[in-house]
Structure formats: structure tokens, C-alpha cells
Length: 88
Image (cartoon, rainbow, N blue to C red; front, side):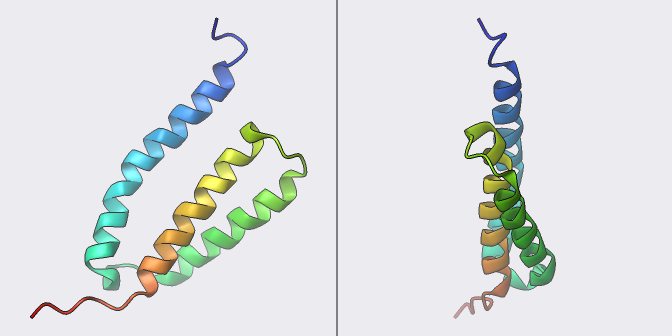
């Protein structure tokens, strides 16, 4: 049953595991943006965008990895650029 989908399932499980781990980074960056340096996240987002362009074929299994990292790195870049919230 899963023979044809095994690589896709493995890829989806990997992305899901990364998302679960990324939640902690997003929460930390949301609470205190000063703990993140924007440059590495920007470079990661640019690299992921270039990877998407380089894929050449619009196939889900080829684009899910670079697309996920583009979204995650872009989000972290934006969070790192935010000013810390002041508490009154």
C-alpha cells in the first residue's frame, strides 16, 4: 500500500517534525525578537527561494522542502526584524 508513497511519506514526516521543532523558535522570536539575528534567516529565505526557482518542475514532492523553508525562514526573518514589545 505505501510502497509508491514511501518517499513522499518520509518527506512529509520530516517536514512535520521540523514544524514541531520550529514552533519553539517562533514562540521565542515572537516573545523576544532581540534574541534573533536577522541576517542568517534572510540568507536562508533567499537560498530557499533560489532552490524553488532551480527546481524547474512544478511537482509537490520537489517543492515542499524549499517552500517550507522559505516560509519558515521568511517568518523568522520578519520576527527577528521586529522591535521588542515593551511591557507597561
